[in-house]
Length: 439
Image 1 (cartoon, helix red, strand yellow):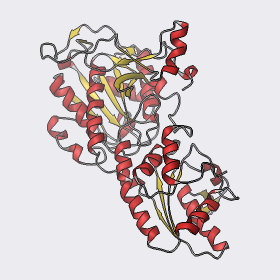
Image 2: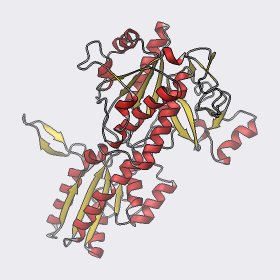
Image 3: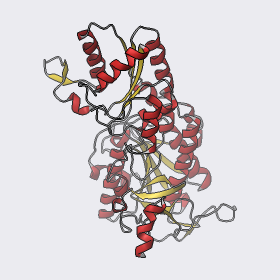
Image 4: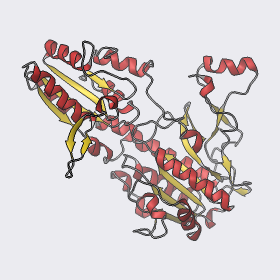
């Protein structure tokens, strides 16, 4: 990583609502506390550290997450709020449950409000008022997919949302969502600060694509890779069951190909993996269709995994559908590739049997796997510790084997993307046997 891309020390400072002079209820329980001065390095490679060491500069670091000995709020007076936003993702209910249980049992918070259907639940006239969350209500929600609070996309008026928080007496708001949700949370923090209010806003990173910056993983990603196994196995069975059979599976990944790449590595039968970070040509001697032709000549079947954001340059101007008014629409990359493969081989009078599988909504709505459930529990716990300590405008992250606090502006400044020169993509190329370049 280029060290010039590291945020500055000032950018890495986490905003605080004020002095923490309330003794934590964890005092005397033997619980290990984390000193506010503890920092976790951003660089993990000696070559990244050397420029700082040679110049005598302090390497950039994140504030470590965890419970503090003194906190900002009197727990029994706290009203906490939760909101889940964006598309469905495995683990949403797990995070809600973890936050409610930690607030209740660890800190003794008595009033927890769940705002329904995303930020729309904070509007001045929501379709559904908030629900009071209890431990009984969340006891078994982690066994189910989706979110008990509902979700939505799209912006809401920031002023109205802060009005709602103030009217409801909310002291800490937990926002569970991805890039857009976190940008909204940061806007809320700025408006709260402008008003001189003392409401903490804590983000929990949810993006199934695993593309949030400065976190090794986001919840839902592990489950998505696991849940992609059956569609890929089905595609392989369909491909092998026909002469020149092609199984085509489209997976999540609008901007980053982590799900597609890791699902490919977890399924040894994939022959092509197409991701947004690596361009490919459709036609030509070195293009994708020529490579697919060579594969079918050799084995007479092929399995293709494509991330939804791959090949977008090929889709420009490719009209494959029209709406009821006759207006041209652009289809997704999965449909585009399916039709392109059929046309290509039909022009050569070569029989080909393409089966296209899009399991996206089936994957998004499943319960979290064990790996994600554990991760969600720890994220929720650390989010509560951060909120009770008066931190705000930050997201809980996992970095260099530690849970840390990342300022939201830093987390949303850029997307994390698959490195075409890195180990993961090299592993994909070796596993699939596809050409290194299809341009």
